[in-house]
Amino acid sequence: MRVSNTPKRHRSRNNNSRRNNSSQKMNPYENNKENKIKGNAIQVHEKYQSLARDAITSGDIIKAEYYFQHAEHYHRVHKLSQNNQIDKKQKNVVNIHKDKINTEKDKIKLDEKNEVKNKEEAISKSNNSKTNSKDDTQDK
Image (cartoon, rainbow, N blue to C red; front, side, top):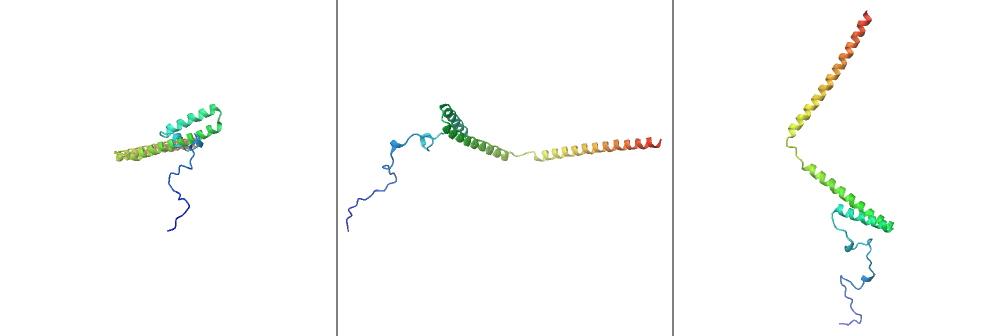
């Protein structure tokens, strides 16, 4: 066997020699675990709103816009989850007395139809009586 003069490189998944922790800064624009805001959607929305207000008072408009965009995103997420919950509740509702409801609706429809018929008959009677009275006056 031939012996090589070149040193072997050890490949590892954790190549810490490339990382320089002193050069990393705590920047809210970077995705660090320490900067992750935890909570449900409405809590995160409120936190980003407060961060945006703080950024405006400090004079950093760009950072404020960044926070406002995130707050808007979590607001949309919250509204979407609310709508999903409402849809689930509506799907789970079962009408026990469905037959009663249908018959009541049918009764209401019939009552409305009868009212319309009665109004039409009253109008036609009044029109007939007017035409009859005109004929009577013309005969005299």
